[in-house]
Amino acid sequence: MARLLRRLLLVPLLGLGHLAFGQAQPWPDPGPPSTRDLFPLNLIPLTYRPVGAVPLGRGNSRVDLQATRGNTFEFSDLIKMLFDYSTEQGRLTPDRAGATRFAQAHPDEPLLYYFDGEVQRTELHFGYGLTARTDLGVTFAWQGLSGGFLDGLIEEVHRVGFQQAGRDGMAKNQLTLFVIQKGQVVFFSQEPVRVHPEDPVLDLLQTVFENRWLTASVYGRLQVPLTHWNGFQSNWDSSVGLALQWRPGPRLVMDGGAAYLRRALRPYGPDPFFIKDQVAGHLGWEWRGWPRVRPFLVLVATSGITPPLPETKLDKLSLIHDLGVHVRMGPRTSWTFSYINNISHNENTADMELALRLTVRP
Image 1 (cartoon, one colour):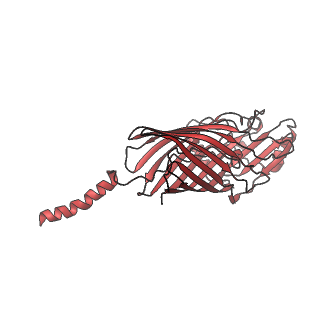
Image 2: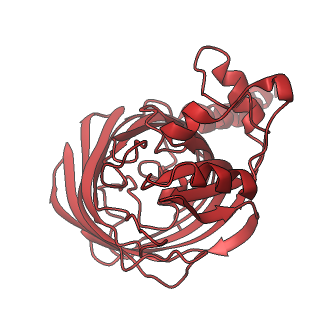
Image 3: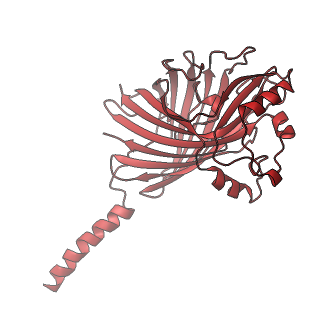
């Protein structure tokens, strides 16, 4: 009887140990994180995302639901130099009258901008394995703008030694977006946007090489211009790229890729600037030595948003990191948490983002 009781107690304990440390249950592989920059000028046109090289397989599908919140506090160098950020008068809140006075004082500047706010973006992606080497997919997105709640947290982080001009002098958690061209305020908004549908994106992935160690795929993405916001609209943006996955060992995976983006944002304003085509890429590391948790680090680099313009850094390289973890919840479900941060500090990238993704393999 004692031996039987020991066996009855041992079975569930072994089961719990196997669930926590064993490898019996398969991973619903989510691929690399779907990192996306939420800088205001990147909200409408097609933007680079890391793409996984490994196809789903014939007849297999995957559903991803991702929520991302990004904080931006960036502005032209001329505004940085001339705005008075003194806290002696308390924190300041920009208004249209102030932006108009500033514009009139600089009638020859081709582009000045001030972006302060947070973006909430929700995306729903459906992927399907058409053949063993070919995947089709579609992404739907909804976006909102507000003053948010991350300013206080970011200020505390910056006090460690990464000061950002103006944060201590401007009102927290405010939404202000304005663009000045040749002495005119061509865009000004302080109105929150709760939920706004975005253009759907179609994608096609084709694996061209695969063995035990390496998978290489080519892909194309097409953004369908069905929506617009405050006069801005994309124009059949598209991209072509190469995605790679290298598996040097059973516990280590390296992801990478590069793409060319054709971006055709329709012009806006009396002397329109334009969002130019881009070249972008990513390099990622993922550890697969644990059964339930896979930490990762991904670097994403993107060429400039616009051609060179005085008093801006919009033409400079953007470099961000995505540090996070995949967590397996079962054989068909996993969560991905991402902390995304601006490394290059060229004032053309969102300052900080947090993302949560649910992946389901039906």
